[in-house]
Length: 289
Image (cartoon, rainbow, N blue to C red; front, side, top):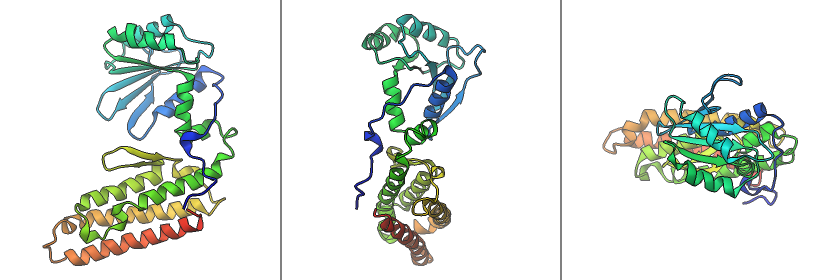
């Protein structure tokens, strides 16, 4: 059951104001870079030699991505872009990717120059303009609300409904619905439990392949002003953590149908899971989700 007041995160039509100073812009980009699938940190501080890199990101693949933040709202030149690339050559360890974030408006000439003339550098070069950053903010509501709470004040109610709808998606997965004895691989079931637990903590729901399905605000952004939602999430998180730990302990038995304790452990696991699903479902129904 969908809620007519729901505003999908990806379709909010908002143009965020540009940061007033370079420091604010750098922190904004650092928070956008600080996602669950990456390990990011600020590189030094203003006034120190940074080899053209303000933010360093270590990807899951082990490579290094350097971000340079240019608070240049009136535009950015080819010379400025190339100078930052030259500086980044001195960064250690060597970069795999180098991205320049700028508050400048999108410029096709600079985009083409970046794709062609800068291909000689040993790292891949990209440039993100304010329109691109604005789009990232729309798709990353936790960061957007942290920096632009006044602008997005009316979004908070809809974000509660949005979060509940994604939670509904999570518990509609086969891992929460199919009888445990019929699970083809209980490891996959356990991973789905963990993915849902991760969603409560980060706001990101992933598939078993590690792809992001949907994103909302993480749990700590909610309070009890509507539906006592934060208390509900805290309670569910604890119970889901218990389910994950219990399933992990039973895993060796659940994977072996010849084990004498198999049927009993299946029943216990399924009872714990179903009890949790019923509790979540009741709350979501009260919310009209």
